[in-house]
Image 1: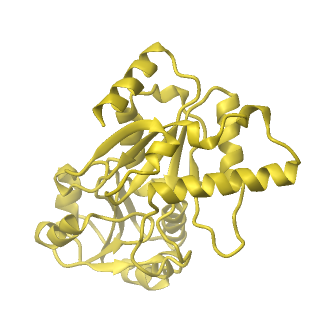
Image 2: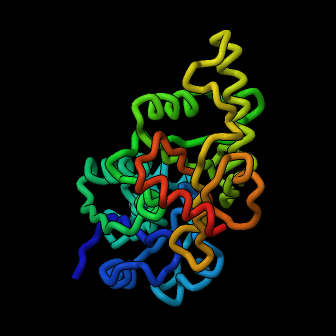
Length: 271
């Protein structure tokens, strides 16, 4: 019998049929269940099924997770399960939560789940060992528009490394409302804006960026791990026109080897 404590449990990328047996058995044995609702999101149909699989749950947003005193107090004397879409320890927020619990002497358990980032790399057909630093594109808030994501992409490209680009889920930046995932057209607009700001700051175009961003190759991955999953290859100008889907991520390849080129062309022809 599992003891009192804090349990971080990965649900997988979206399709609840991809949850592990360990995850399901453990969650059914919890005294209190929370669904962490701001670092990732479940498809509505999966969210509606969740209670029948594991039992009643409450949504926990950014304030409850980043200021977890109430959750940790409950976990001192009972079993508290926090369900996380994907793999729970890929977010620094959850690492911090585990450390806080450990510092209070609270028993902690982590159950991994299939990560959408892992799926994205494998489904792209690109070699996993050739990926550099992951990049997140945030929504712009007023005049706030960092160029660092584009600079990291450029560093990867110059090192002949592919880049997995994760898209922001929260236009408010507050983590209170249910996520509203960024759409492909928005991320490509933001990359253009970052490029213009970077050129203005550096007073010129970097040699590695002399091809227009709209003509860059990309692989768009949509709703990974669900029945609506799509993998689409093309240039960014075409990918910006893709409609539908909920959660997206983007891969920007560096120079592809022959096998990778063949896979890219196959994905392009499938669309």
